Image 1 (cartoon, rainbow, N blue to C red):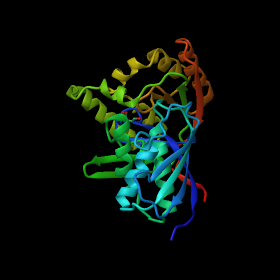
Image 2: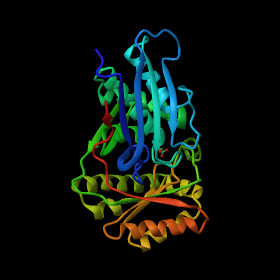
Image 3: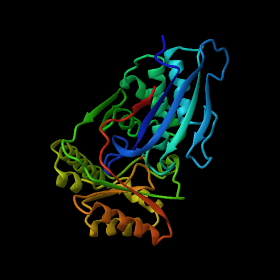
Image 4: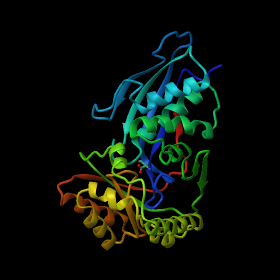
Length: 318
Ligand code: HSE
């Protein structure tokens, strides 16, 4: 009936918004992400603790072991409910290999790894389309809004667009070129998503919306054509960046440094405080210039050079 007793799944970090696509576009990145090991503990279980989180590493002891307060646990519980399975107990071990509260989709990666692991273990073959609303519920508990622009690319890989939230309609885009990104994430500067969403307004001037839509439309054209110049010249955010950049010390100088050093596009990763730049040459030099900018504000950072990860969540060991 079950494929295995245990499985390990890796889910990648993601960059949501891609500058002007707030809540509707995101992409998965290479190298960093979370691993969740799911193990079936009992198949005759009766009780409320059907999901146990027994181990979390790489989180500096900040994440909760309570499955109702941890996105992997919330997702696992909701997934069993969706499957109408109430006699199985599953243990989760979470290994974080990415910064938390940094705008790189940390909560999403744990949730994605957990759902993919359980779907595999129980041999339930639930489609991505049906998993995403469950994943979005855990984002809502953590950030106050059930956005999908981290969970979708982490699960599916590549670049995804959310055409509509109600009904949910996710469209993957295939970009024919490699995009050289450098991501710089501050160490010891947390910015919880619920906070960086709280500062946003409900209404924006029409002229900003028109400018935003123009850039978003051309960003998508650039991504589909694989035209790096169109992609980068479209990375202008008239709505979200002006507010959120104020939460990132030295942001305007950091961005200027990056552009002076060859960045063709620059923006905040998701809800921040991490930032990313796209370039053709000297991507490391661009990253170092961003790091220097943060250091001027006494913020130590790490740099990661990455392409778009087209694979998404993957089974490691079963
Ligand atoms: N689209 C979400 C936001 C992503 O910007 O709040 C959170 O990482």
